[in-house]
Length: 383
Ligand SMILES: *[C@@H]1O[C@H](CO)[C@@H](O)[C@H](O)[C@H]1NC(C)=O
Image (cartoon, rainbow, N blue to C red):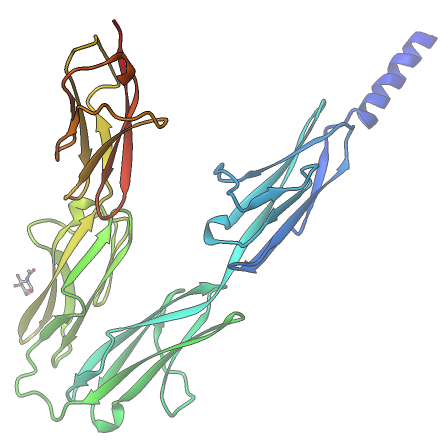
């Protein structure tokens, strides 16, 4: 082996040892904090050739958020006054001439448990009748859920999923009535919800099914989830089914006894929903009217208008979304609107005689009770 070959091998060895892409570690690997708290993640380069550039990104590619600050060398990411939108993964990315190294960490937000019990009660139940009490909980970490009867510590047998517990109570006598308590507990705290069942006397003469809904009118905003609650009495216990008037149930729906859940509702899901309680004796229907509202989405008829001085200008703004929608026209960048400008209720901007100074960007803002949206259009007045 001559000297030149030896030098080549040595440089190759040095290259693999020193010419390394960065390796990073992060501390802590996960953090769980309460809303309003402050949390920091430290990213450290454990090996790799200098210089190394550090940067942080969200794993969902969303912007970091205005309450997220980076230290001077990019190693420390601090989130002050944590809010729900900060939850998720963060990636520390180290880059040098040889390549990239990255590591992720995640932030979860701890929330004390909250409980919602439906139907809200008090409920009057006749001998032989059953009711289903539903307890839905939220919180992080997931709280444990249990039903008890006030005055007793024994947990009652209920059907539980991770966020709900349904308790079926059959009332045979006054002793079976009382106050039922749903308890949600986690490291973050304890929450309780209660519902009173009153004994409504002897069996109803016919036990005919009777359906009733907790809320007859519901309003939701596009994209939300909505839950409808139907309660049925009768003996034998009726079976509840859900349908939609003159249409199939939305694709993203779930039925759990008397509870109908619609996820990610759209405007086409508006309408009348029917709860049908059926037993051998007959059936009873109850109705829920759902109205799904959507924020406006504004567009302008044209991206750009070129006209001469003295010409008339008509700019039309259009919007879909829940009515009523109000329109406003303004100029972008603070220039004042031509004194001769006129705006109509349906989004038309009219300028009878254009001047060169009317050139610029114009903005239409469409607003309804859910939100607002903007559309831009350019006007060029050329002599
Ligand atoms: C309710 O159920 C009964 C019996 O099954 C049926 O005859 C009736 O058409 C149903 N009503 C609706 C709205 O589906």
